[in-house]
Image (cartoon, rainbow, N blue to C red; front, top):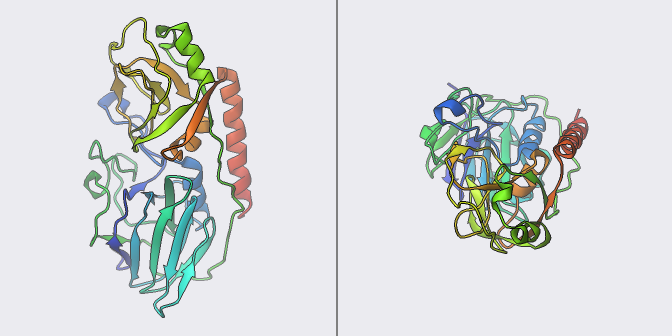
Length: 317
């Protein structure tokens, strides 16, 4: 085992290890989990020469304060994040997202907060020395699945780093524009016709408020109540990331990475994959609108999303 590690001086609000997630385990009730914002997760790894699915530290709102011990590292932070590098000679360096930095022994990273978003990512070259659980580094704290006993990080813990020494450091950066778009595109859900015509019209024409009842499992919205004219509880069915469920109170819930494997609320819509990242980063107080697209349009929009991600990656080759 490496003797290079980060000492956690402050864990932050909700800091955990994430990768793209674990697949093929729905049949035993284990969902994908994984990074909430898949694109900037990938870019954080690319900036430090990692495999694009290497485990990273995902944080929400306030991030961790970390002190490096016994080595040096190449690291990058992605997102809309305010952070400082506290050098051991007492110099404080203001960090910039979407570029890499060289960190020396006893230096610190202070991730102060996210800005107009919720999630950010910290990657180190070589990755963290952690065990994969069911072929993934991702932590699901609701299900207690993943490394670190399925828990988020706590003060005093040590996060070991695989690579103890960085040679030939080369600065890399990406010219990245964080999305401020508040329109979320959806396809109709399997229970769309459970709702009144008036409710269907409201769902697309009126705004919804993002509440503070949001986490990696899902996001509760407030707005026009959706009237279910068939049944507010249905036989439990399989769920996927992006499903928009409507419980008895009529307010929609968008499900995210740590959603349950099954659920019994009617599903009015599903957020298209191209908009998963954007939806996950919506801060409480945001006002959003839903826009319907066809399945074919959703597929084309995902191709555009994938090509845009490739374009960002090409900036650092």
